[in-house]
Length: 183
Image 1 (tube, rainbow, N blue to C red):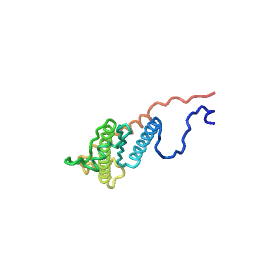
Image 2 (spheres, one colour; image 1 turned 90 degrees about the vertical axis):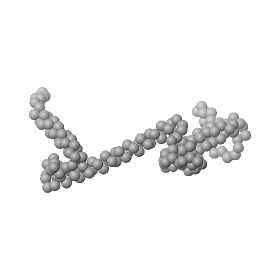
Image 3 (cartoon, rainbow, N blue to C red; image 1 turned 135 degrees about the horizontal axis):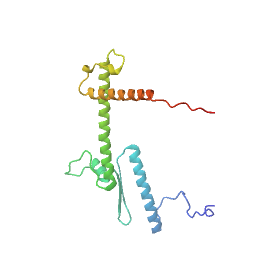
Image 4 (cartoon, rainbow, N blue to C red; image 1 turned 30 degrees about the horizontal axis):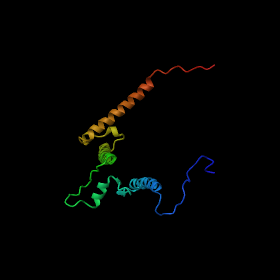
């Protein structure tokens, strides 16, 4: 049936795990399996956050390596080179790994900044709520009770409120077009 549909491969089948005698078939299998192994290693690292390093030596003495973030970084984090101080975050040496390494560092720094700003804003909100004490609306807060850090945020909020009220007033006062008469 597969031959009638124009397919020439045998598709995916179970094979006996033993050495392949034909050198060309062995090389093709090596290349495909190596790619699959590296893909699995990459997925394992991304899904679990594990440090993964895979090194493969071919029959022709070629070396192929995959490391997340890099093979050197993974190996040094578990077995530091004698006489070399172990770095807290080793810098990878190869292409995309370097980019990924610096992107992760930048993302961590931005995440820390966002968390700090959120904490600061929660503090500002809490102080504004405290300054509001007994008043009906937040904009009636006791400005003298606010500190230097809270005043700029309070001013921004007041300006935003003023702009929203101004837009609403303008929309209400704008001349309305006459209704369409349908016949």
